[in-house]
Image (cartoon, rainbow, N blue to C red; front, side, top):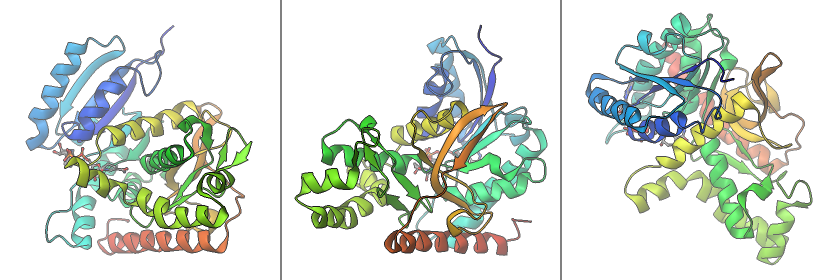
Length: 346
Ligand code: NAX
């Protein structure tokens, strides 16, 4: 028997990622074939027509699982009863805009949206911030939803970075991406992030990725050089590479990662190892409490015994990994302090 419909609210539903997301969610790619969905698309007035057009096309797909689609520019209507909120719409950086201006503009979006989530979302709501700066936008939304929604329901998307890292390794090792596990993205969804393969394995613990790289690239020194000089910067700056080659930012891969993020949180991580997501720190690995930081995470699903993403603890970090994580965390602290100065963190 099909379960009760799940209400999924997507902000920026008329934008590019919104357009790529909604059809796949309606087709059952995110919550599985047995869970009907209601979609709520939140837009600003300028984006309403695009979202309304997408809603017409969704109707034309006659997806059996899609119960209905509402389009609105009112956050209280959009988040009413929301069980999954995907915060995609954000203010992009424009020419001449300082970092502080960008943070302030997005605080003006994610603050009121967090407040609306706190006021009207379902008791079991889970939220992922996709719009950039994603980690700090999640922090702002969580602070604004308090005390009605626990902060740990708020996450930010670093799954695209994770998937990019797996894709790079798969290409070099000439393996299917599903044979690589245990990659981790640490820190901020920005160029300071640390894509870490120290614990990554091929074929469920058969071979360490570093050993497979050493074999393919001609020794351990060559593998370490490739990781430092090619892999880490390429993953961290892949967004810019996509813009340069495609002439437009990542869209389908971003939507795919957002679907992976919600699916694994809701239904559980499929492998024995882990994935990556930015979640609220409780001090794990020395990351200051309260920051929304990317960690290796796993989930047993969201149900009576599952609480969504949990940080994988106890991994050894060498000095070089520690330094990279500390640098990215310092950036998150600076972003948090900048928005705190705006008075949006309560
Ligand atoms: P688009 O500009 O195509 O779409 C954004 C949409 O959001 C527009 O339709 C706009 O009208 C709407 N919007 C703006 N303010 C809003 C508000 N207050 N309420 C509701 N809707 C609002 O951008 P798109 O390519 O879809 O990217 C969306 C965001 O994702 C950007 O911030 C982008 O930087 C971010 N990304 C994040 C990634 C991640 O891994 N975390 C990767 C991809 C992407 O770069």
